[in-house]
Length: 503
Image (cartoon, rainbow, N blue to C red):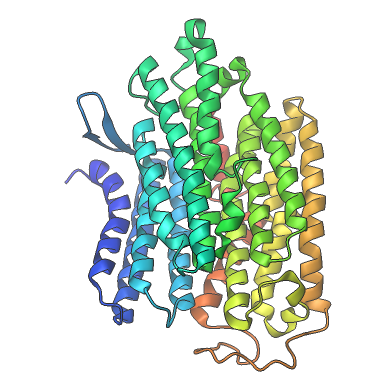
């Protein structure tokens, strides 16, 4: 068997088979469904580790299957896709554990986990896409697979959020399709390649290429939650906590920013994009979105909505780093692709624990909760300080390289944006942390919720809920503490960037 061909197929197939198996499992077969879920997630991590070692030892993994006489479905592992694969597979495994605990006793679990796995199938396909048409197919598959998760609870509020989500993302997908078709008419099937593929068209198609770039950014900017295309994201917070965690750290929003990274570096090429004059406006839009999202987060009283607007801001760090020309900005963008995922999924895990265990949803209800749930709020605190950018957290590492990239590119306004965002992050995270640890407890007179398998009867929640939050908090902490390691997200980002900017 040619493993170099089959492994890129098996990576998304493992999630697809998991989804199909869950469909035929009866609703009351909880243990079997959990086993299938965890087996699929574990196999994926093993396969990602294998291809990671293969890429490190100069193996080439590519599967090419014809869709028509001129179009191929291409699944390929390269350095950028490997970064996204490692993040997605690891966090899918942990989110699956969390979802099993969160949905214990809930109806329609087979339906939920089926679409949950389909989401990961699409995310794997996006990670591995070797050309624009493959990316587009899985990009739209992700849109459709996520909708049932957002409306899972079936309430009017959930259905409304689902309609808004579809309205935004389907229009965004149509715009992305139009941009892809336009590129195809100019150069034919477009393969992703370091340095881009469109530079030879510059002498005769400059204005068309500028229009195409704008069109693609609008289409991808919906899932990337760029202003003013972000409106669906806070509304989607009515979804269960595992879905929120998946949306904000792994799947939908990361697909948008990953697509923008691919567009800049592997379709246009960063040097050519600079010569077209399209990156400066994108960097200004990203900078505005960073500050705007932080300001909106400051005025949200619902914890998940505050985290949602924080995501709007944090995603644009990645876009900003990609749009600011130079190696340092690229390193910051790629490192933050991972750092943001680890920190944000921790925050949403903790928000889910608070809501599920105590029914806490508002930031004004958190007073004193740290003394009753020290492990949960300890994980939340680590992730929040990372988002603020406190040394030596992972968020500080990202912001350092983004700021360095701005200075080296002569865009000193980037420093002002990063400082303003950090100040605003302090304003909407520090009061939560202070009240949780030092405020007067409002739960002391409240009976402990009757929940099975409590780890510490007076403090925490069930192990499947608590363990993923502790693991991701630890990962986000070590990503900052050991940023200098070759195996850290920063180390991987440096290696990828060296190849991108190699002469």
